[in-house]
Image (tube, rainbow, N blue to C red; front, side):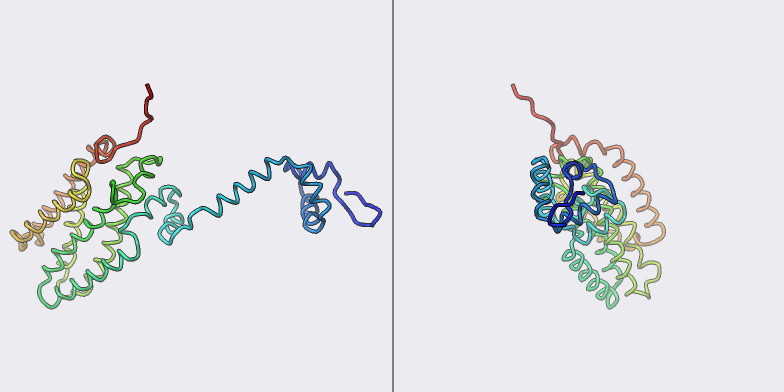
Length: 278
């Protein structure tokens, strides 16, 4: 630093240039920053000595930070769990993970569990597996996913994104269903008979999604489940019936793993590719 006639200290020109270029180290860096905050003369000299592109880049970073969307509670939770930011944003956009959707599911489960307790546990066992299908139906696809176009160009495969969203939907629904099952203590272990069917219906929906889309696939699987319950409700929730459902889950999961590439090659789940101009 240098001293002028007024008795005040000012930064030397070489220190200003080093500060502007990021080459000034502490403790001189800290003294320079403290002095610049109080000295308008040195700030003017710094502006003249610094590259104008540095200021433009700084303002660009400020604008980007101000315009960046504020992460919601779901996205913040995913980031805390170590999920990459772009994946967390795509997951947080899922309709079935929004608070309004979860509240609606919780109220539906509470009403269904109450009716089942007063009437027949079969009401709850037949209805609970259908709830994840609603979330899967709106998880991914054109016209229903607000981030569909962004997901197509994101560094993540369509199958992986849909699978992650379905896992998140099934996980949250499973927790809510488990809590609702506590309202039927008299049913014993039978009150958990909804779990394997919910997995089976979800995997079957994913298996049909590349051909028909998530909405049509979920509606078809849900209708099939209702018909199955109407025809064999008593057998589905026995030990033999649950074993059969578990085998169906494993077979459907194996078939889904073999069809993973179909999510990136079909008409309903296209991947964007560079266009060729003639």
